[in-house]
Length: 171
Image (cartoon, rainbow, N blue to C red):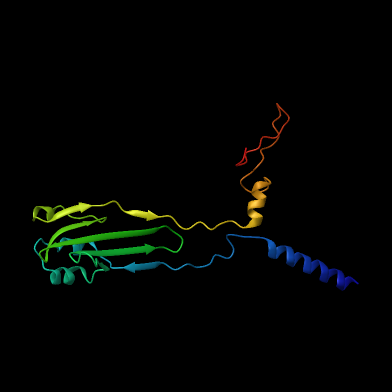
């Protein structure tokens, strides 16, 4: 009988423990993801107006995207997503006129000396994409609606009025 009692208690505690949710234990390792063409400041400074497409390809590498409708525009896109952070994306667009380099735009620091050499430059602000927020399950939504979750915390009893003050989302 005693062994049966221990067995039942163990089963119940394991079942209840399996239903609990912990966000910190264990942490799953998420890898850093790099995609695209890495173009650094040193490469951009080597660009000069009037360079041919082959020369630009030698300096910056093969473009990530060549516009199919307008082959005089090359895109160099680099994306970095750390395991637990926001994704960063850097884009450089190289424009050609009569098969020669004429215009550079992007969201990396472009040296103003290039503008002095006659190259048109436009800087664009970088965009950071926030991580995807997972949707909550049925039980989490029900707890929030019934004011039982983290979103609805009751403060201690106010001594002057004798009532509880609720700080829920739906108050």
